[in-house]
Amino acid sequence: MFLHGTSQINAQGHLEIGGCDTVQLKEQFGTPLYIMDEQLIRQRCREFVSAFRATGLSFQVAYASKAFCTVAMCALVAEEGMSLDVVSDGELFTALQAGFPVERIHFHGNNKTPDEIEMALEAGIGCFVVDNETELHLLQAIASEKNVQANILLRVTPGVEAHTHEYISTGQTDSKFGFDIGNGSAYEAVKLALQKSHLRLLGVHSHIGSQIFEVDGFMVAAERVAHFTREVYEQLHAEFRVINLGGGFGIRYTEEDTPLAVAKYVEAISQAVHTHFSGIGKQLPEIWIEPGRSIVGDAGTTLYTIGSVKDIPDIRKYVSVDGGMTDNPRPALYQAKYEAMLANRANDSDEETVSIAGKCCESGDMLIWDMELPQVQSGDLLAVAATGAYNYSMASNYNRLRRPAVVFVKDGHAELVVRRETFEDIVRNDLVPKKALSQC
Ligand code: LLP
Image: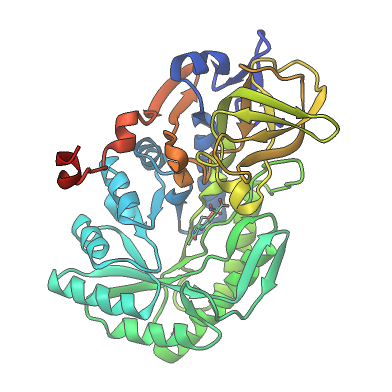
């Protein structure tokens, strides 16, 4: 398994992360356990910020909290001086609980409810990324009722869809997100937004995909957005002060993945901005981006205890762990690939090919197919790497499993930032109809 960040093998032959021995972490916190390498998260934050500083552009790096959203994480992002992207009242509430500076919160989503809009306006968040015409009218109505001004970006679809090594120029109008540039709806949305007395149009937003390993898609998107910006400037005399180019920067899950260094993405974006936005309006726009996965993905490791082992001669050996699709739905949802190792016998040589199964009552609950491990025994600890993004945040209580605890590890200290759910948590919202009880 590739060792990310501060992960290393210690003198006892155990996997150690942030100076904490994973065998001891199991003793202290139990398994499954999400272990977050705090130093690596901070390093990634700083890589984005310093790469942008080097470009001379005005910028904001907003962490896309959907990747991993807890109060501790929002507090860390605030400490790193970054902004935050939220897509629901739940994420907004978490940020507010963390005391996140509201002016640096950006609110996304293709179906913000009136309640969510009210909550965000009352909190005084920095910007709404308006997705559609319904929202333009709704936001104007609620802002005017409250007699406040809302900063907005309009989400546009530039006709670029990017995934890992390729981008496709789609000219695609068929997306649930945003106003299409190609069919003229983005232009109409700008006209409409400019008429709204309680909306302050700062600019536009585009997001082209996730887990992207090349810069071309970002550069083409920047070019198309610049073209649109020029059209708006020349025909409507409106100047975009902010251009948000979204997230999507790839990370390494397995050796098949070859992401670029953070600085390379930022340099390419900066180059495209300088080339295509120069000469539109008085000055270059402020550039915002929204990395999620690339901030937390490789900083996360999930620790499991191995339970049953089932050997089907000449076919397959299933090794089951005490979690699965409930704490990591990505293999089942996206056929996502992960690497793992025995955390308690990290120096032992690989001896057999096994497949790692989760404990849910579903054949599709497999975490890793056909990987090499030493001879495993019940009670061994399995560490799965690069689980920091879209694992905890997408976890469920399927089969009424309790969601794992999360610890931040750094310099030999483990800080519990999310408690493991209890049985009480599992039934907390369950109600028994009074009638049924009286009949018992
Ligand atoms: N901004 C917008 C508007 C987005 O929709 C997303 C991700 C991001 C930023 C952050 O993208 P990132 O840097 O994390 O790639 N559940 C999927 C990923 C869904 C991404 C949705 N949007 C997964 O587990 O791979």
